[in-house]
Length: 305
Image (cartoon, rainbow, N blue to C red):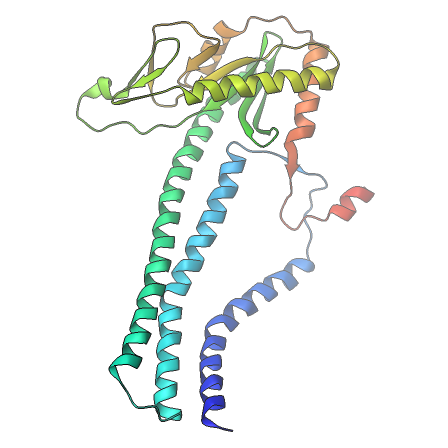
């Protein structure tokens, strides 16, 4: 065995020691899961913020991979450098050392940048997820007065955060979680003024959430009308959890803060839908939202059931 082969074997052995335990755990889990199956026999309904939760999981996995690779790549480079010096007899030099250091710094910079990006993404996603859950917990109270409430309803390339179906109306609710400025101004920092066209937060204004809520309500109205075979109307609602909404103008989009859903929607409900139509609409939404696969789920057994 020549020195080059020995050096490669040593570096390969180091890499194997790093990654083999991870691979063994993965295959053990797969094998263990193959011996078990879920007791559930059908898909689950989507939970509040289901799409955001999946993004959070993906961002967490990417951050974890970067955390693992951050020390591994520089150590692999160092192992290669030492192997060349010890087994191949290459003399130490400033150039060789500089090359290893530069590559190590580039690797560290790359993975650090990746980690920071994913942590920023996770923070933003978590904020949005918590906002959706907070609003959902309030909206779920409407089920006590006979409404159907669905969450994270899949559209065509987007998701509607919440949909409410009641004999007194159908509502598509978009949730937007916005951080408040910390300027020690009390309620002024928690107040958003809606003039009928713009959302004026303390320090900035937005129109995109209003347009998104209206666009999603139009899509839902079109899809439901086609699905149930008759015209149904859908009202657009924008929820801003944690904010006090000062309404100074009228709009096709209703602005709420998500609290006291029973009282708020008790005033908003305006349509007159038969119980039979509500059931048909709810059935279509349930079919669309029941797509979450339980852990260790066996689709073949579900199809045979």
